[in-house]
Length: 492
Image (spheres, rainbow, N blue to C red):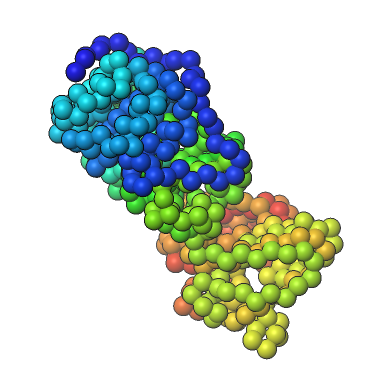
């Protein structure tokens, strides 16, 4: 194997192929062929570098993704003792000047590295004594300094999949650490890079608060920010919103249950300038769906075959039924958990006249009034706490949409405050207290707390602007807010 000591620097952008408008599935017969398909769809030969990682573990490739993206090259997967035919074909097409082998001989054997010499002028192994040292070896070769570093657990892959694409987007490295403390080699690399910002990926179950404390101690002048959600999907959504605050015209979707397809997706996501988010086999978790809706990407990619992700995995929100139309209508609806369960509905109307939505029972008698407005409308409401709607009666003069979800899909009040505009539904799981409520609208303002066991508290009921302190009940509660202006909740 030929050794090299030159540092990977920022290079001129190679010829690349962005996604076409619409949805593209990038897949092959297996994970190796999928990595080749992603590369083939993205990079035009010849390339300066290709990065090769084992297809049976995730650790070495996590840091390799941003490094490959920085070199405008792909990540391709191989076996420990073999180079699959699909990858051989792709390397022959790419004609890389250098192949970087990620990890030690326990991951990719010396014999396999030797085989790779047939496809490149030089082959360089980037490895260390363990996954943490390998990540720092990749970082040392790729960056002489970095203003931002992304830090993820080396004991799991989920947070680093989206985090790797975010790091690639910013041309910055991703490092790994132990979950309970900052690994020594990682601390040393942070000190060398001297970043002014560190993003810590995942909640305390992934990386403890001790890790944050260790990072702040190692980099006292740096801003250390945790990017986390309630689960791997919500963390993925949080990363996308933070790193792409203005949205993106492209998005990549990968399964949150395995690592292989997303490892190769990182450089492709960089080429297209968009995030890589995690999804389930058949539908988008609500947090990820919300990002997709707000970004409204013109180009999307599904990574992996239909056995991994169905076509609906990038478009359909989990646990949601959607209806749309124009003008007056009566529609039969399906609610999560059955007809008798309470649910939440997100309603929109783009007309200029009267818009109302009534629930109807099995006899077509009116039950709940979900919306009543003049002109355009967008809001989320709780309905059927004490009734059983089988249909909805819509009165409208423009196009309308209705999305029905389970009450558990409503956002949770994080910490002790929330704010927003218009009709909203939230979840609260904290203890009883008092809360300061405000509203700056001119119309009806109410705040209700609904207990799924049947209790119901009216916390505020006013016309126009409002400021006041009220008793706040213990959770779990579904908080229903009706408002026509900006509102805020501050729990004491």
